[in-house]
Structures are given as C-alpha cells and as structure tokens.
Image (cartoon, rainbow, N blue to C red; front, top):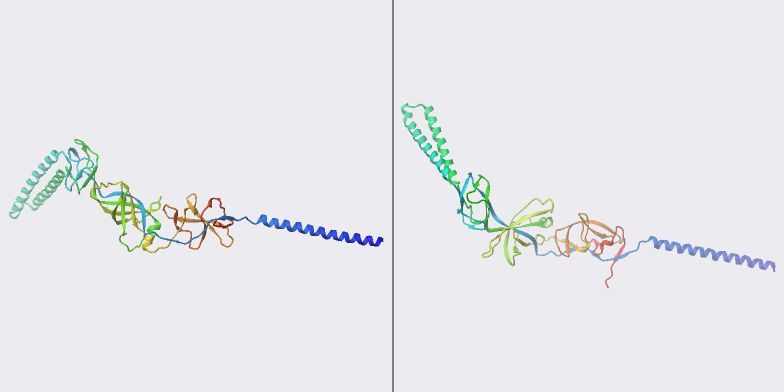
Length: 365
C-alpha cells in the first residue's frame, strides 16, 4: 500500500514538472514572438508612382519684357547754351529732324577766323610754289608755308565741324523717350540729354532655364512658331523671330537671356517696359527629347535643395534623393537630373516620411 502511494506521488511530480516546463516554454515562445513584432518596423500606406516618360507639349511660354530694338542716347559734341529745344518727350521724329540747337555765334566767329587764316596760308603757299623754280625762296621756306597751309586747313575743318555740331539731329525715325534739358540751359559736351527709340522694330526678352537651352537644336537658326502676346492685348498674337541668346547664365537665376524680334502693330501703342508672354516651339519636341516629370506633391524642399523619396521595391524602405527641377509652374514639374525611368517614388504625403521608413502601396477604394 505504501509502495503504491509512493509510485503515485512520483508520477504526479513528473507530470507537474512536464506541465511547468511546457508553460515556461510557451511563455518564452510568446515573449519571443512579441519581441519580433516589436522590433519589426510598421509599414504605412503611401501613394507610390513609377517614374515614366512624360508627354512633351508642342508650345511653351515664358514671361517677357518688351524693349526697343534700336535705342540711342544723344549728346552734343561741343559745349554751349541751348537756344532751340525742338522736341518734347513722346514726340515722334523722322531721321534728320532737329532735336535741339546751341547758340552758334562763338562757333561762327571761330569759323570765320579759321577761314581767313586758311585763305591767307593758301595764298602764301601758292606763291611759294610759283617762286621755288626761280630760286627766289628756299626749299625750307616752301616747306614752312606748306605746313602752315596744312595746319590752317585742319583748323578750318575742325571749326566747320564744331559749328555743325551745334545742331543735334535724330539719327533714325522713332520717338523721343527722354529729354533732360531745358531751353537756355548750358550743356557739356558728351553729356546725354536725349533718348530716342525706334518703335517700328521691337524685341521681347525672356529668361530660359538650362533644360530648355540644352534641348535646343544647335543647327536651328531660328525658333519657328513663336509669337508675342501682350498683357494689354491678350487676344492678339504677334509673330516673333528668334534673334539672339546669351551663352552665359545669370549667376542668381541660372537662366539664359533670349531675345525675339517682332514688328510694331499698326494702331497699337507698344512701348518698352510692357509685360508680355512669349510662346515658342518646345525645343524638346523638335529634338524628340523624352522628359521625366513628377507631381508637385512628390517634391520636397530643404534649404536650397529639392528632393524626392525613392522607394526600394525589395525592402519597401524609402530614402531621400536630391533632384534638379526645371523652372516652371503647374501640377507636374520636369526633373532634369536625379531620377531615371523605372524609379519608384512617393508621390504624396512626403512630409511625414523619414529615412528607412517602410511603406506599402495605398490601395484604391
């Protein structure tokens, strides 16, 4: 009987031990499972986009400023007092029209004196030429009279020009943009007092980003299908022709200045400084360039740098990558550098991301 009870106690003890070990093992397993879940990062839904080739538009537009193709700042070449101010600002002038005149009296007096001196030197020189063969005068005397003749001839020409310079004329047909003198005012030689513009030929100046310049065909002498639309006349398209482009970028904007020319429109007062829009054929379309564009919501800004969040499609983790964005506005922006076709990026909600975050595609409802 005692032996039987002893066997029963041994069995109960063994069973309890097994149950205890199983319970401990279960707890350890549960703890390990919970630990794994805690160390594994949680994924968050994100709107993803696989980068592809964007469709290039036929025409692109840029803000433009109107300028006169021909501008001249005019000054008298001699010092004097204005006695006739013949024009006012905004007045139209034809080539050769008088703009202003200086008091000519002092210049006329100098011309009369120079003319008398020249005539006297001419007489003396001609007499010496007649006497040289008779040995009446020496050759040194002849040389002296010839020198006097040449000097007085030059002085006469200078006096003639000085008198002529007392009248200032329009160098071309156009309009007087600025007058900075008054009648009876003394002016110094070389000081600009008039600005005259030719308004029959005008220019529209724009600033092009480097990605547009880079795609332009180098053998194309002019950009076709370009036109100017004035802010003051939005329904009018004025044909324009490419004239020139700067080969050095502006240090601040990193853009290149490009000039288009166009003719004035009858009965439309187009003046320098007016705002306009220049529409031109897209160089990328001409050269069949395949551009990459992404939504505006995919681009982040940090200081002066722009970036996107690129997704590793194997681990589904994100990393920040700097990109170069072309100048432009709109919901889609062209990427010049930093992305290639096939890259996957987060296209929205990027402000809450951090490096190494795990994402999963946002399911459409």
